[in-house]
Length: 506
Ligand code: RAM
Image (tube, rainbow, N blue to C red; front, side):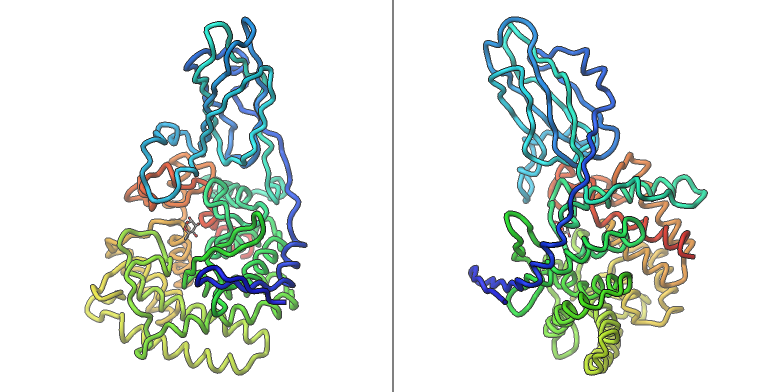
């Protein structure tokens, strides 16, 4: 059953049975044909050298584009040389791709240079794009003919259909809009798997997936896609049983050789959420050992003092993209959080041995968190040898329930008041902040923060929510340029989860 393939030191264990279950749950994608809103402008144009147009498809789309082209004038005596650029936000078109010099591949920039030797032609582009705007520029024709664009459309694809979701029952128009944009974000990321972003990285990331699944339970309720992803992660572990931080599905399922301590630990939380939604015992039984293994691996990293060693801001534990964020204290908090979910899973499984072991460990680690990281004078948690104070550390300590509720409430209010310099920069981290507020009985404040953060993105023109958004620095990018940021990013879709919980489950 378990096949092993060796890639240097990265040893992948595939559980073919699990992968078969995942494969059988592969979704059929819904297709919708969408045309630009400014077709009239297009119809009136004949394109000569350097002529261009920006088409607006009215909303964020993910799909396959076709252009129907012909020529006007004398017989086509040279290739038509055409440039296409796809953008999720109109602002992206102002940035020059040639200037990108960051650390991730330029190949993510959605642009094409195409020669068309014979017109008329139907140009069906093989790539899938994520965009609202399409810039078409004719780089050159000849003096004797021009290009005419008769038709342009996208076959938009998704595993789900937004029409199936009724509007949020709330008076506040901003929250209604936030909910709609969140659902669009989720829909466009729900493809063959829960992708992190349909522009980039277009793959299944564990941390993103856990949040998408939560939003999906309140909206599309596509349980099969969640189950498929749980089995994909569980079916491809590496080395001592670690789950990869992300995985690829093409040309065949393959885990990435990246381990993220926090993402792997959060697998158990995703499994528990799924079980509580579906009561699918078989899946719980199959995948429970995988979830418990992640906690055991996490515990192996503890030092004799019961802390996780300080690896500063290394990409070993994700937490957030904040510049200079020290992750030592947060990684311990996430381990405690994961243990609590592990205990809940163990209870469903009737696994008394793990209930006892993990409960004891939970108490030890809570004590360790206070002993090592609580700064009595400042009344905040610190992290790392420099005793850094960040938002992320406070939020994760609250979610770990290191303190009782009332003290957690004081802590979150103090954090808001102090406003630590190391900010939260991703909607992923903001999700956990909102969660911490709710768990501290600060529901109204949580709603206001949703208005302030996601609402501000709406004011900044979001059709779908973004990968990175720092209200204090709107040009923040982990990749050296906002051009590379994804503007339809799964981990930002969770306002719909919170809002529907507040207004519809209450
Ligand atoms: C980026 C992506 C992805 C995220 C990882 C940690 O590459 O944005 O969504 O999960 O970082």
